[in-house]
Length: 289
Length: 175
Image 1 (cartoon, each protein chain N blue to C red):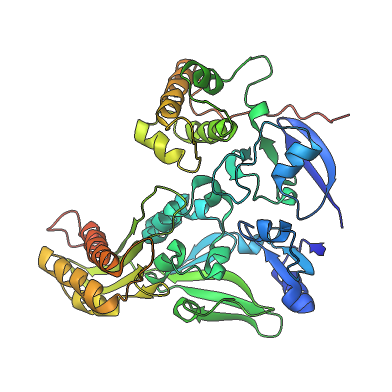
Image 2 (cartoon, each protein chain N blue to C red):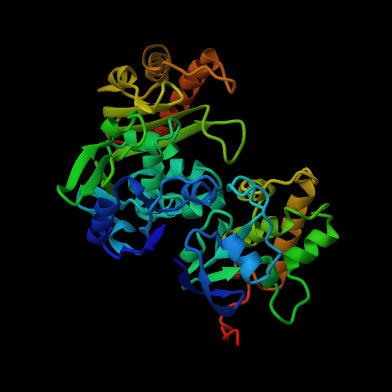
């Protein structure tokens, strides 16, 4: 197996194109490492270490857009002041991922491309209207709504494709929250997780986004619950109605040895309510930012 | 296709040729004879192999050795400054029985060192959260938490709150 350290996206694309299905792009390597070190051959012909590519490692806000390079780590997402301020749900989700040591190396792009049905980052990004920038040698960069990638049977990317960045539209007056339920503080995927983001106009929600993990075969938006919230004030009746809607209409919870369908449905209601309560403006009479 | 690797480990510079697929753990143990860092699971799920890379705690079993190029790695052997017998964390673990079999201990201590560098006055809950990436089968964690809290207090008393762990800035060639 050959080894490469491209310095630019273009170099990486040439390599991905050249080696096709034998190419193994290396980001954090939290999965690729032990796969490649396994005695069984994997068909890999080229290990392409992406981490010298500076342009995939930045977090930058320009106007109403937050652009996050695909190689940004979970720890960087959890601690970056721009992410915490403008996409709090993503920072919270990143903080809940794996364990501290994993967060040092696990990347945004690697996590999305793993196609994990309970991915914290993917769930949070769905509540942020995230778009993925996918680049190929032939086409150049193309924006793809994250919704379209989620729920695809793996592999998430086709041979020759590189996920270079994720973009999130920023809207003033947005508040967001991530609520994750698992039986341990670290390592475990969620039993259920809820990512909620709401744009406020004064005390009213103009638009809400709710994403659920553990309520289907992949993270998904809770669109029925979202429509319950649109144009409403966030009081306890609205919260209860939205949480019920998320649990009863939007969720098709998984049943497995970790939890029953019924328990997951119950968790959807509880965590949706918790997420929404945490979005309520602290000062009831505030007109909002 | 061996790759050149230049890195500093515990304040010493090394130049090696490594298999690009090799983990940092295998290089530390097999190439550098630093056996303090242990392999617990090989998949990043136990934290026994925790080392610091530029101050950041990582699972050495997962990290590709080539990704430590030009970086400063700190292992359990490098925690105490040269002149000191034991780092306050190590001393506290001895005093408070923060270990039994000791297999998870280097990883726990390196994680704790990173935690205290970021949060010099943690609560007991902060410690439990901060060490959630390290599994121990022997102690039941309570003595680990007490050891870390003790060490935090010692470091604060010594005016070393928030210091970066490990030997730094004393890079000298291996020859």
